[in-house]
Amino acid sequence: MPKSLISIHDFTKEEILHILDVAREFEQNKSQRILQDKVVATLFFEPSTRTRLSFETAANRLGARVIGFSDAGNTSVSKGETLKDTIKMVSNYVDIIVMRHPLEGSARYASEVASVPVINAGDGANQHPSQTLLDLYTIRQTQGRLDNININMVGDLKYGRTVHSLLQAMSHFSPKFTFTAPSELKMPQEYKDFLDKKNIPYTERLELDKGIAETDILYMTRVQQERFSDPMEYEKVKNVYSLTASMLDNAKPNMKILHPLPRVTEISQDVDDTPYAYYFKQAENGVYVRMAIIAYLLGYK
Ligand code: CP
Image 1: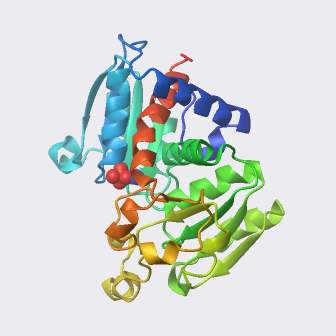
Image 2 (image 1 turned 45 degrees about the horizontal axis):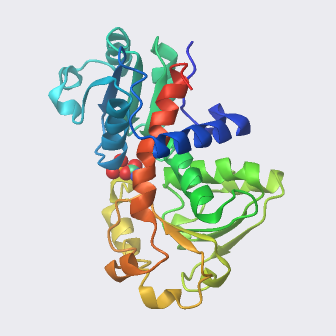
């Protein structure tokens, strides 16, 4: 079975650091057409702006061709074709598959039936490892290091696949966590058990304005309407946090605000003009990191 990226655990600490170094090379030299004979499939069974477009930009900058879909409703899935048959078919056309799917575990399953590497571009509330690698890249870019970072994760920590993957990846680097969430959206116990086993400290908070002063990285997340089965539960928590510029008065000078995006109401527009806002540059970094992931899984770099 070819090497895939389904969970952040599929890469060792050394591989993670290698990807970040290669991504830095791509940021310095943005077009390297080393994959001119390759075809990349982007199969998006769930909406996306950044992940799909940055993977497609990455493939184009590497000289590869891209095929795929952004709406499975226009494919034979709508006629009842299974995920297994779809992946086996696409494997015969391309050299690597990037897939987003709403079902947890679907990306692992796809990697087991595919004959080419699969990159998980998000599977339900489970994992989003390429986002994690770009988050790590951005943390290192802004803080000059990955070790001993104080990360405050805010918002939907229950369903947020980006915070789950980031927590696991940061465990290599002696972090200290603050989890800021309403009781309905707390970090799941399995992730807290994971930290306990590794003796990594964390604090849980309800209020956003408490704890900003000690934070190096304020990792904001959206409350994801699409993950709630009960609309009333979503209504209760949808506007639970809203970060405004006036809440940043006591922030460390080099504190940076990250967000996987899209945002809704959790970061006010006035934060965009502060020196703490880094989420748009973070999204740009996705191109360089995804170039590095594609090249690495195809045996280049
Ligand atoms: N960060 C992220 O996954 O964004 P998209 O949903 O727009 O791809």
